[in-house]
Length: 148
Image (cartoon, rainbow, N blue to C red; front, top):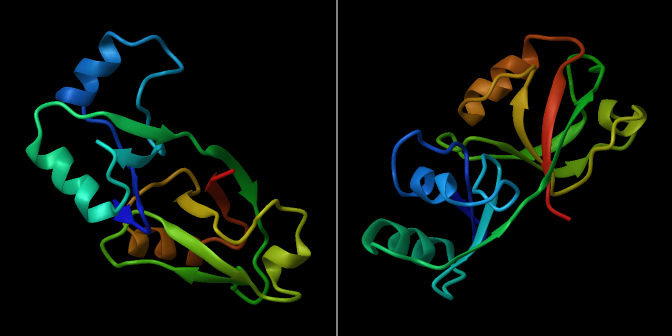
């Protein structure tokens, strides 16, 4: 999922160059779901990185591994109390702001601007799927991916 100068890895396929790389790479250095590609062959603009990944047979990639954790947030009036940014085809919801005295602000949950919600109640999917799952529960469990 390319966005804001990065490519977010939503899943690693069972067959392909990444799986091949991972099979010969020590654990801890393997490419994993939720990793963030920040550079491909020195390119740092998302569309250029994506183009290189699609057209080159060998690339040098710089990755960032976010902290991924779960938080439970009781909704207030059916609202999470955050400002969300997302693309319909995207696979995450990005927190662009916290509503003062909203559910996220009042809870003890560790939620911050810039966090990405990558799953709700353990379910991953499109941004629309995540929103639907969020609305279906009074106390959803959010899986957050945070850049340091």
